[in-house]
Each structure stands twice: as structure tokens, then as C-alpha cells.
Length: 228
Length: 228
Image (cartoon, rainbow over all chains, first blue to last red):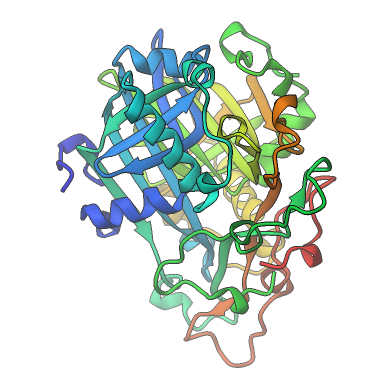
């Protein structure tokens, strides 16, 4: 279980705090991308990027020329946050409007991955994180591509998650107002794959593309219940 | 147009950089939520929250007890980032895999909104940002609810946006490989509204809930083209 430091404890709405490692991992695994926070000359920056969790490690990757990766590679403090938006919560009162969401925050310091095997494994894991099954078919990294890729690892030792679920929570005095209240469920959905124009005619669209979906947590609507 | 400072200029993939204010505003307006970066005791934190743009201002809001809002209210440096994920880009080579996305970054220092009219206007704008049409029906804020809400304003004076669009860009040597390549389009979609159980029987589900959608940029697939 991730360490429960004072700085990573959920303060507002503590009832929304999740500290079990399984809950944190499920959010990290479902999210396609994360937001990475770091500080340069006292200015915070927040940059979106793809992540992947492998056991107790979060991997980030990119170009060696990336300012973010160069900064993080020096071992500065970093905050990696992922957020999944699950619904719009419409209460009777403006005050009680909200979003349903699940988010996870990981604090720590990253290290550069130098070991070739770990680097290859991390890059394969990134592709599998986004599109399970893809690494069996895609052309793997060449030595010069590995050299042109920076991979960072961040141990998940200080982390927390937060979630809001369920219907709106209106004040009792508002419940009888003739105002519709409820939740509009939201999810990230995939459309039909768009084949690149030079793909040879005999190459079929793979099932992992036509059936693309993110993992669904219990209680989320099934695909067929989502009209749009 | 937002100032083009050195620190907000897109460095990696400069061809993906968008500095026109219209492009930045469109991303800020479509995104339901943002990620706010700030620094406490040299540690960066990245917290998701709802934002809204009104003209040249970004408004954030929440509880007066929120650590984030209290910190930002003191005028510290902040980075607000929003990201829209538009698709998974599957190239022939693992190296050229990517995501299609649009993101915007706003740097600056926020101020507490003390003026009652501005505060009310900002809270109404937040609700309209998430669900256009809702403020005509929802019960507006009472004085004690206004007092229990902190609103911050951040001028959009230093901002940039970045986007990746289109098909995978494989190396010429890889194009003839018998590997499928293309894009899996993604978007945030809404399911049927879930009515809260105490809503009176005569209150219909409003059209802004049944027809909920985020604005669609040109070139994005239409709803009916999205199977899932």
C-alpha cells in the first residue's frame, strides 16, 4: 500500500479518499494519459503525456530533447495525476452541481531508465497500456530508436486517489422543487478505426482496434446502454 | 492574443504549437475539466477541477477549505492545463505510436473574486460551461452558499496550445510492412441521463441532458459514425 503522507492525504471531502492500492492502480491503468507537474525556476508546469504502470512503477517516456523529461531525469519532485470523468451531476441547486470522477495522484522523484531490457519492457508496456495486443504486431524498437527515447520510472510509494460517484446530493429543502436532477454518465468511447491510406489491401483491421475500449469498472453503464 | 513568452512556447514538436487565441479558447471551452498545478514547499501538486472561460478570464471555484484554492488565492504561480484526447495513433513501428490530442496551457497568478456580481456570474458560467441551459432551471446560489464558495480568476495572458492530428507518420522503410496502421478516434460521450429517485413524476428529463454533448471541432467524426 502506498504511503499515507500528510501531503498526499485527501483533505477536502475526505469521504471521497481512496487509499487502497488496488483502487489507485485501477485508475492509473484505465486512464490513457496523465498530467505531470514539475517546477522550473519556481514556476509550476503541467504537461499531458502517456504513462503506464508496471507493478509498483509508473513509466513516462518521450524525446531526449523534452524539457519535461530532462527536468524529471535530474530527480526533481514530480506529481503525476490521472483523472477519469464519469458523469455530470445535476443537482436542484447550482451549489450542489458536481462531476463524477476518479483521480489518482502520485508524488515522488523519477529516475532515468538506463538498462536496455527495462527500457524495452517499459516501451512495450506503454503500447500495451494504450492498446492491448498491439506489440505482437507492431515493429519493435531499433537500437537507434531506443537511443532516441528517454524513459523515466517513478515508484508508486506515495499516492492517493479520490472519487465522486452516485446521484446528486441536494439539501432536503430543495428536494421537492420541480427541477430535474440526476447524472449524465460520460465515458471515453471509440469510433470505427481509420486505416492509413498506404496500408496494403490484404491487411485487416485488427480486433484490438475495432473493439477498442478502456476497462469498465463495476457499476458503469455497459456499451449498449450508451446511446451516444 | 496571449503573450508568447519563452516559457510557454512549445519546444518539442514546434509544428504542433498553436498560438492563436481562438485555438486556445476552443480547447479551454470544450474541456469539461482542467488540471491545476501549484507548488507548496517546493513540491508540485496537480489537482483536477472544473474551470470556465469568460472572455479573457479563467475561473476556478470550490470550497474555502480547499488547500488548492487557498494557495492560489495568495497569488502564487499557477499552471492550468486542459487536454482533450482525440484518438489512438497506431503506427507500423512501436516508436511512432502516439495519441491525437489538443491541449492548452495557461500560466499566471490568480486573484480572489470578491465582487458579488462577478462571483455570481462566474458560478453561473461554470454551470453553463458544463451543461448549457442548466442555469435557467436550477435553483440559484443563496447568500450563504456564495459565502461558502471561493472563486478565483486567472487572466489568460500567457498561454499556448498544442495538438497532434491526423494519421500515423511512419518511416518510409516501414510503410510496406504487412502491419495495420491508422487511428482509433476517441471522444467523451454521454449515456442516457439517470434521474435521481426523488424527482417528482411530472418533471421531464431536460433536452440539455438527453442531448448532452461537447462541442465538436471540424473534422471530428459525427455521433452517428461512432459505434461505441
